[in-house]
Amino acid sequence: MSFLKPLEITDTHVIVKVSHLSAFGLVWLGEMLQRLFNNKKPICGQLLLFLRPPARDIQILDVFLLPSNLPLSEVTAQQDDAVYIKISSACKLIVDQRYIVRSDPEDFEIQPEFAEFYSNYGPNFFPTFEVFLTPNTETLTVMVKDEEGTEVWKRRVPLQSPKRETSQSSLPADDSLQAEERLLLARTELIQRVSDTVLNQLLDKLLERGVISDEEMQSARTKSRAEKARDVIDSLRTEVSA
Image 1 (cartoon, rainbow, N blue to C red):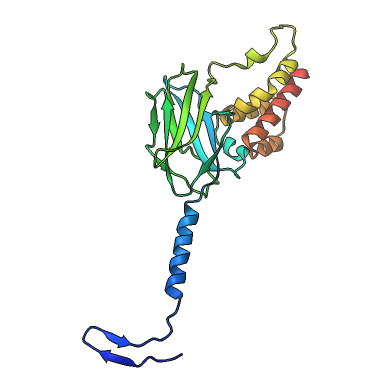
Image 2: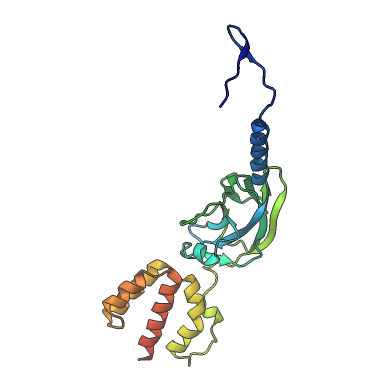
């Protein structure tokens, strides 16, 4: 430690002579500029789309802007009856930058007007944007733009409403099929579509019929929606084959 001897003292200033200045100020400024630069550097992101079932002549397309390292299964598990639209999702996003979503046709309402992209997500996953569609919409183009109006993602999105699709459409038109065989053929689609509410009702029915025990029912309720659906459907197959 050393003390600097003042050369002059006034009412407002103290004048000292320093022969060797520290580089602290320059280093601090450099670090701040580096942090600012890093924040503007794009990272690998993903844009996920989920289509909700129609309700009151309105259907909602949920748009998620997420980092690419988040597993799709974690997001899907929280979307209830919404159907994941499988489409190329890779994009470059900048943390803390605002983005907007536009559609073609342009007459669809989109909320919010803009949203910031964050690097921290979970454990709850809510849509970044919501596009309000009409139930008869079969296809549209979705665009994501940054604050300067530059497109970072654009795709033509085919929409297949859960209401317009039925599990019977993928089954052979053969009345001779046994109920167990029909369940097996529809198993994958049912696992993807059936809601938690329906699954819990089916668990109650299986318990009433003695197909599963109380312990099995409680264990199934603690599982994810997809795992719960597998347990319920396999239990139903056992019941109808008995």
